[in-house]
Length: 530
Image (cartoon, rainbow, N blue to C red; front, side, top):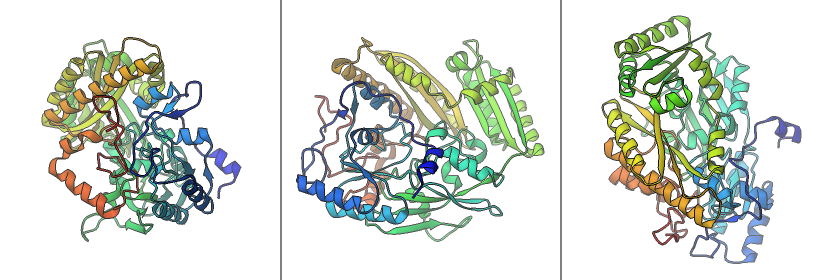
């Protein structure tokens, strides 16, 4: 168990926004078969027995603020609710295991009591994936922390799932290595969250998404079985079982330990920046560079709106920022190809300081909190699309969002590139009738939020984009899952039923059907849970 001094030194979760005044309460009253509070406990005696059994295994808390913090993540809609001192759904208890064996025992206790179990760590997700929809037990894995071993020769790092990004990179840097996974949430997110939500770092064009970094996993299943997957550079012994859990958002098993590929620290870094006459011209240049196997760590194209807002644009042009790490010969060749492709499509040089500005501000989320306090509706949506569909996805999403009554702005940038396509990342802002924070305006805020998301997501799917690139599905995007996956969604449903037949683990997420009770989100037309 970590000492208080060790705990204070390591990274801790960051609350998304301060609660308003008064007692923090659940916004939802989720109807469930067993009792009206939404947990599988039939009486006070059942709650007492659950708390007693959990306390015999690991530290637990029923302190109200602790429950409230573990009842939310960085989902922007829930941030609005927090201003009214509301969380989606309070859990009964937070359990904090210190090792995999304690996770196993907690899982078996929850199974014995038929109580849903939701895993949390950094709680930095933006889709509601770690919200305990039906109350029950929250499993906080922050004490599963630290780098266990480093195989420097192979470049493989063994790390516990509750380890935050800065703590991981600080430790592997002592071995002259880097994992290379730097999402915007790097400072406030954990390895387990990266894997469970299939995250992508801002340097992914060089280092890959998290699934390309995973060598193997340790997972606790819903029946308490502990398994290990992967472990080799490559294999051909049936389907890749690690992939079963990567991106499963805690619905199929609890990731407790991860083996990750690591790279030698790069000796050289170079930067470049360009202005393009149009967003489409920039996309064409990116495609040609990537198709020529020039894959700089950072290759980000901002449309005219975002370029003018933050990247030195004049309101008409688009800004491309380029950064690469590696051996000098490779970096020089990569940037030479990018420059050639950029010039072909009408680019002119932009100040390299644009890259420095991005590096300095890339993880700044203060605008989200500020706009939320001012009553604006704001969120981001990231989808992947083939190169042949990029212009169409950009155009149709922007048009669909702009047509929503109350929409004020929509913009986009291309943030992660692949041989066959890229991720396009939209930001949309809406404005309701009043900045006052009360029940009426919060309902209006939610209605506009849903309208913006419905317009944006369905336009992306219609135009040839997918459902999500790296933010995951959680609760917010669950309603689109069958639409996005078609009949293949039934395969996911059957996997859930096979691995978790009692719907113990994170029920109600990924759009999966649940017998735990009625879904509180999205609300039905009459505003009630459904």
